[in-house]
Figure 1 (spheres, helix red, strand yellow):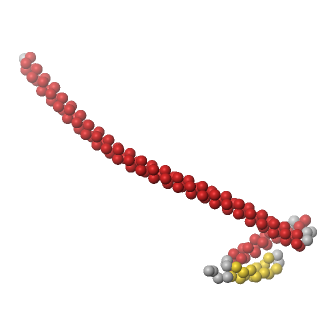
Figure 2: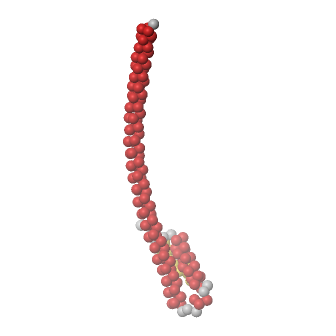
Figure 3: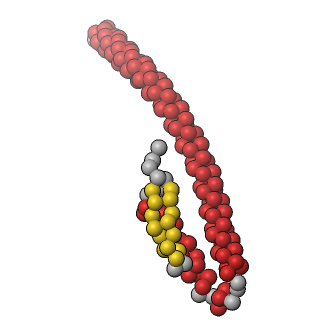
Length: 146
């Protein structure tokens, strides 16, 4: 378990000691965020006239609003990641199926090439036999005619 950290931070002009299991840098960032919200509201003229408890409540509501918007965005991004993961899975499945089909097609192609080679050799033999037969008959015919 990480060590507990304490850090003095300045929030709204007052020094506070924050403690937590996060680092001091993180605690300072939290204080900075709160100060930015305070400064954001204090720049509005109407805010300056509100009682202190109302000011605190408005700042708290604004921070809660930021939190819920961020949480909604995180949920949306998680859904997008889940959808992308599913698409990646489907694409990998399609890729593997395509590779298996390509391997099968390659095997079929090799078999057809072998059959084609055998047929071409057989054709060449038959053509040679036919040519020999024709050439063998022609001279016999010529000799008979003479």
